[in-house]
Image (cartoon, rainbow, N blue to C red; front, side, top):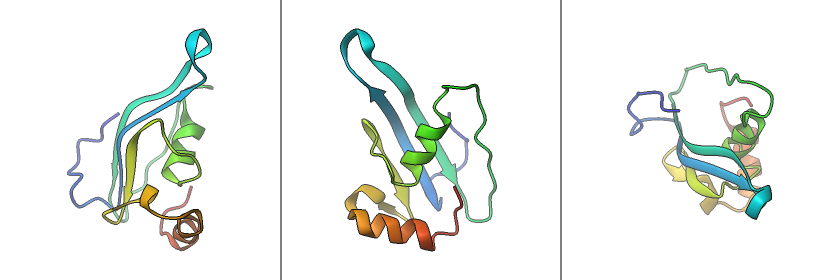
Length: 98
């Protein structure tokens, strides 16, 4: 998924998110190459069929889970350079609601 907007000035960016659970024959790919750009004041909805990866995406965007590949950038900084406590503070102070 790509929104087509300029990602350089985005408040929240997802870049190449991939989330894989398990391995071998039991491997499940929940997300595969998700790109997203969210501007301040913009509203989006995440919709899809059961099992499509909606909750996984929101958990990754909120810093609750770490993707197998890719990055989430908030305010120009990768959220994965922050400690767990800093990510919690960011979620609580963020203008974004999950």
